[in-house]
Image (cartoon, rainbow, N blue to C red; front, side, top):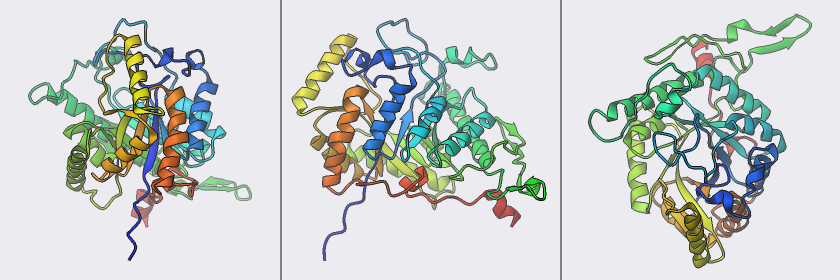
Length: 401
């Protein structure tokens, strides 16, 4: 009997400015003068689509980037400033056909009603390829932009400092619940559009969500019909138990940061336990490993490039996740090793987007295809389809039936 072929891996790329290394903008391939143009983002995302990647995520925030965790810095030697991630995705969507588009949204200071219709609109514009990456903000300076709440710097250690951190993630979980209910507040056939009878919608198929929670009170329904995917993908980055719980309660994909297969296995085990606790044991939930990557023709060349970037930055690059330096073959080996720990895919963070993204699409993808671990063509038309997720039933239509 022949052995069962290994499952295909899923691949995404996280796009952030000119790359994840703070000195990336100073590299020849970085294109810093184009960073705030639509063409720059279109080029990066179409490159990712040429590599048949499942989706891209687009970083965003409500304050300038900072080398400090909870406050702005005064540095002028690093990229500062962003375009809005949802608007980038909407601009690029008509220029692409297959790749998923997953902008970051900050739950802490934005309203779920607004985000629900923004992502639903992106799903329409992209014909079913939208998702979102939900994140919290624990920065007092970002709270000061809105003036509606005070946030003091939070910690993640046990004790009093943990309570605000936990509360922000509990709020994010309720935020996603409201967004999901709003997406379902229109049944799929609520729009009649019958000119002869003069009926555009069936009002009985629009539903109040009547959400009353600790953080939000939202009546609904949405003003945007149910998205093409029914439920666009919800994703979140998680480093420890509290955010793991958010992933288990509300996400379709969780991004985690293991440094080896044993750690990956332990993280996946904890998330699956939290998923059972949340009553979602029977629902599909992908767990992706995050990796910062520097890809070159040799490990020595990749390490030399990292050293050069670190010298430009004036300090060694530190990341919340493992930093890989080496060849596409070596990275493929690592991905297979980590996948054995229960990960179903990976989100790669190019250190220098202009250099490392083409290496992912031109070197890593063919290597994984050679190993029969990655698709050779898109075989689905939606982001849910790329991930093997079915279109969910509408909760309110089911209740009414």
